Image 1 (cartoon, rainbow, N blue to C red):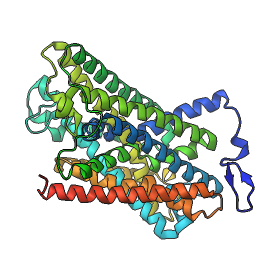
Image 2: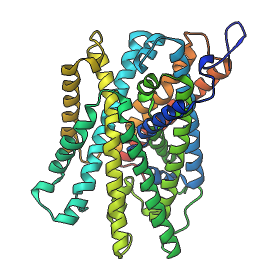
Image 3: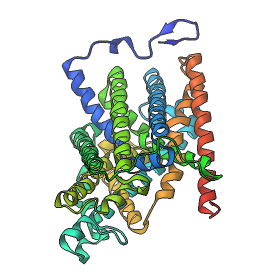
Image 4: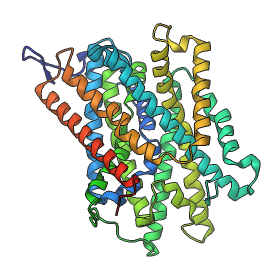
Amino acid sequence: MALAKNGAEIPLLPKTEQTLFTRENQQLILRAVFNVSTSIIGAGIMSVPATLKVLGVIPAFVLIILVALLVDISVEFMLRLTYRGESKTYAALMNESFGKIGSVAVQICIMITNLGCLIMYLIIIGDVLSGQGEHLGVLQEWLGIHWWNSRNFAILFIVLFVMLPLVLYRRIESLWLSSALAVLLAIVFVVICSVMAITAILNGKTVSPRMLPKMDDETSFFNLFTAVPVIVTAFTFHFNVHPIATELGKPAAMSSAVKISLVLCAAIYFSIGIFGYLLFGDSIMPDILVNFDKSSGTSAISSMLNVVVRLSYAFHLMLVFPLLNFSLRANLDELVFPKKPFLATDTKRFVCLSLVLLTFSYVAAIFIPSIWYIFQFMGTTTGVCIAFIFPGAIALRDVHGISSRKDKIIAVIMIVQAVVTSFVTIATNIYNMSGNRP
């Protein structure tokens, strides 16, 4: 419940939606859970174990829970104000509160964040299939090193025969089956990591994980903040809230789907974090797949598990790709062609935008060898704006007069913590990159 300006209590969601879910509603929620969960679980999962090395197990667990709770609150702000107004997109919601400047700001942030993630997905898929540097890919391990299984050709094949058919779906609901498979692959990834970790524990090949961070130099405290953007980016899916909610058409169902998805994803993130940390200890890399490239054992089963882990993660990213591409394409179209008819009804414009984005992502993935620091900076700039600053600002602006005093206090806290942690993280990264770290 929220307080209206006259002091009367009003429901956060329309009364028509406050009913018991029918079987049809449950199926709709399940499909929405798959799409939301797939939007959340992307490349961020590969770096979650490294956050445990930086923070220790307990602070990392607290951070995952805290970010998930804040994301739930920020999405609730968005949904509540969306259903009170007439907005159908994130940009339109910002336009209601802040005019053209607000809508353009969120569109630019979404495009930068999503495009960066799509490029990162292709880079990781290329690394899994064809390797990078001294690390061989799966195709090279199986078939030897040839020109036709090089990184460039492997990514091109995936783009043409996997990505292209998926990005040409015009409705995000049509991707629910691929989203379900993507979530299943993420669970498979976690299960295999857990099996490998438990086996290593039984064989006495693991070390006890640190419960708290290791503070051994002057910059260690500030380095703890570098773990924040990884978790924030890992939970950022706000750009797909409106497409999924619009097709779902039921406010209460969308709210339930978001909560279920956040619980599921938090469990997956912490599971992969703890098992990955147990498996590789302090030698864990920012990209956990690099560790799986190193054999965790001499047996055939260990080698097979290493291959399955890498391939399951690569397939997962292939299926996540079209969901992020969907929101990227929609925001680009809304920014460049604001007066054109709905994108899905214009075949020529739809296909052209899809091909341009896919081509740019491929070319960028070929020429950018690593985007770890870009990933860090995205999490402290565009990502944090999309997830916390913009939703908090919308709740404070409160153009429909439905935000309670508690909502506004939470919004202020959300914005302040986002700005402070982002500033500290950016400053720490610049300091470390300048070579001043002891």
